Length: 312
View 1 (cartoon, rainbow, N blue to C red):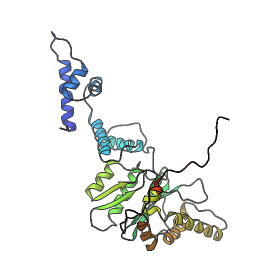
View 2 (spheres, one colour):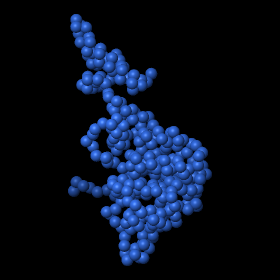
View 3 (cartoon, one colour):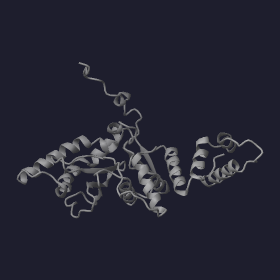
View 4 (cartoon, rainbow, N blue to C red):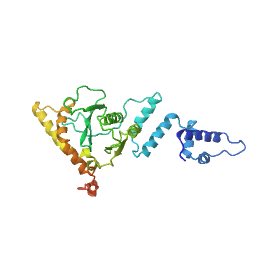
């Protein structure tokens, strides 16, 4: 029978007492034998001996997080674990030497035109109800910058990270935004791309409490299985056209942060039409349901077209 974290810690304490308080006229028991008799690994008991006791509260919380993420099928990422460690530290009001910003993020789409020094990401969500959730535009900045959404599609929101990529706290903010815009019918299926570094247990638990089923696509299948990706080729073409028009009308100026939303907004509205959204769900066989919409060869690995002999 599975043991709760508190019960497990109590059992480890009893095992430590057994190890320390053996009869003086008998041979000292081995750590391995004690661990086996109490039903856990030798490594666990050796660590408890070394630390002078079982896991502390913070360690138990971190271990539970890791176990729960594995059980839910999302696995672990370095950035996700770092983010949760900071959550634990703040929750327990512990002092720490770390900065506020961790590493690791997920790019949704890099679409800034003609300027390698800027980076903007986009989270776009379309619905099988033939509509789209207003955009989240993610800017690279360590502080909030006002007046960046002029000309953006209606109800677009913005976020800021030190990388310009989606991060854990921003994804949680977007989930709150998402549930306030969709119909109250539950459950709701939310299909995510294969970049799972911004998904943590808090987000998963929030979705579970609000009737949202998270489904992360397998790696390298987004271009075939993600509905919002289907119109993306056209979006890039429309965006390039919009950038060219902006440049021609503004003395060859390039698109930057303060003009991006306006330039991109027209391209987005031109691309994600009612017909385009319907065709996207039809192409992957979701609506109308068609299990044969995607052929196996669409998911085959790429073939090698040219090889180089590096030994020469």
